[in-house]
Image (cartoon, rainbow, N blue to C red; front, side, top):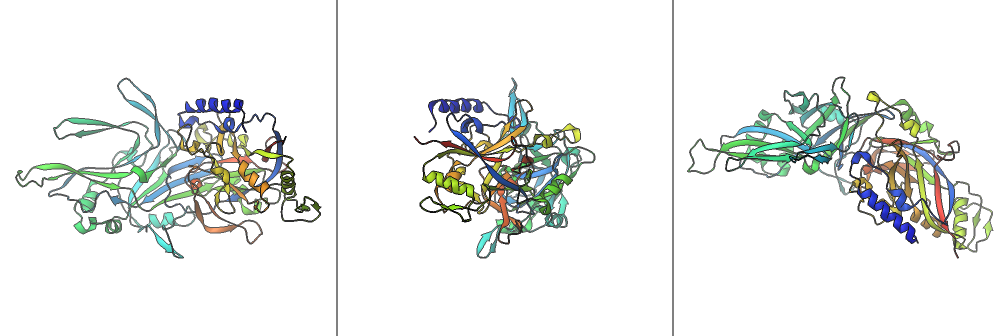
Length: 567
């Protein structure tokens, strides 16, 4: 049990982290809560075998968050994120009205942002969250009508699944490129297309109410693009009524939008993570004759139609890995016997780390009476010894952690504009053998102390720890106490392989399938078949020290177990 002093430490830590608000200044909160001061507990460290694993083309449809833009990571390479989505009318079989004339058509998609200040007049200053790369980055953004029929679902061996799209190397981008209609963001303003940027300014909407009074509405930062009025006049207001009558008919008639990204000349680029589906929409504002028969024939009224960015979606990510990164995760260069000295983990079509706990030496075992048997049993000798100690009550596991130290030297490399790589705020450790969470994932802390979605489940850990001097990450700690207890207490529990990935949402634990399963090493029965969906969403990555003997001891990946001595 934790003593009173430790509980006080938790309360102090909770008070401090509640003051956190800025997404950019994210700091670790897991250490004080788990506790580095273990008082009279005895720490032991055990070897860990850890090696790299490339993530090949992987499902990218139906993600909650999608990457849009270009991120030039000076350490790992370049990620380009385009996006495609179906669309749906907010109301089917709308009454258009006679003599309709469009005033404006705009697309809006909110950004992740937070308020940093509010002046005396109520004007708010915002900062954007989840934008990676130079703050002055620009991209060439084209929004096309997509003519690709995306199915919401199909049946695979009797199971209904969404139509699958994958990250790069599968020609999905080429399919959409070859099947586009009109370019819709064709404004003469470059900021709307060829020099688009993620604008953090508050937006003021101006409308006229029924009494003719001007109404000003303040809107948080969002993508706001003016779209081609002639296209929507023809496609929507002049459409045959049956084309707007139902969801199925409409989705075949207007198949969707394709947000295609390219470089904006010599401008530096950046990339944002965006939730298109929750609030993304197209609003058509127009005038039409009133339906009131007593009104003069020239009387019109203001009307609008909303098209939501919902339905089937796909994140069309493409990666161009730099040479060092590509070499590190190449299958021929992975050391699955001694482990890799550096672990490269990156989101999207990136890479993961595979972790095997305990030394693989297996020459002894113990019988049910605790007597030594000089023959292997398929279990690590270290684990056999721990199980014997548990049975003879020589020590009880109080806490167990894996601490992943960041290679701060490699991660300090600067790119264009003297900018360092953005670091992932969270890593996720899971049961890779079965593609399920570890038991410690259910730590009872579903809420976030800071209100940041990446800071939930803080006892489980995986949150970056920030060095106060450098303001850069130095390690991630993951608590696996219950996983280790189960391994030791139950001799039938299998010591499964663990996977480590970056994640954009620790609450997303389902897995996305690889297009083609990848064999791990020479064992024909061991395959890498999927990766957690939270890791597919974002472009960030980091370099960690592995457990290989060549790694300096103070940086080497170890399993740390703290024991309580029985009375």
